[in-house]
Image (cartoon, rainbow, N blue to C red; front, side, top):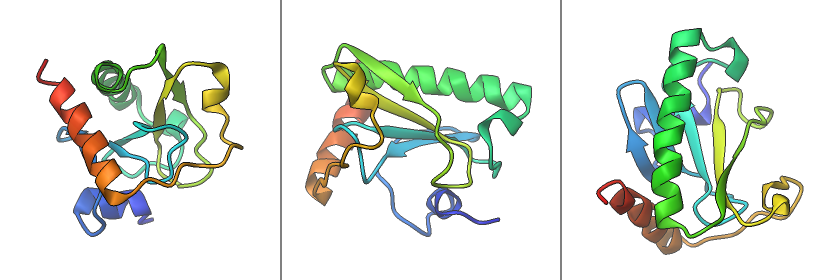
Length: 132
């Protein structure tokens, strides 16, 4: 089943990518809870995170850890929160969200409306943090 994430992977839909390997992709959420909110996905189409085979799952978590470290360098915060919701898009994904308090991970809060320029600037900050 083709999802919006599959279309991002194939390049049919543009995204603000912050990291990519042959198996995984990390990009900015266009409706973020906080500036720097990143989605981390396997490129393989799997609906539910806990259906991902063990080796790919371990690789996804290691990739998410690498992205989270760069994210924390780029976007000052106390910690990078991790959330798995999985209801909005039927493609396994992990949310990485810069946080200073627990309420920063409240998905019932209104999402930010960032401009294309703000998203581009944020993505560039994260990309540059990998170089440090």
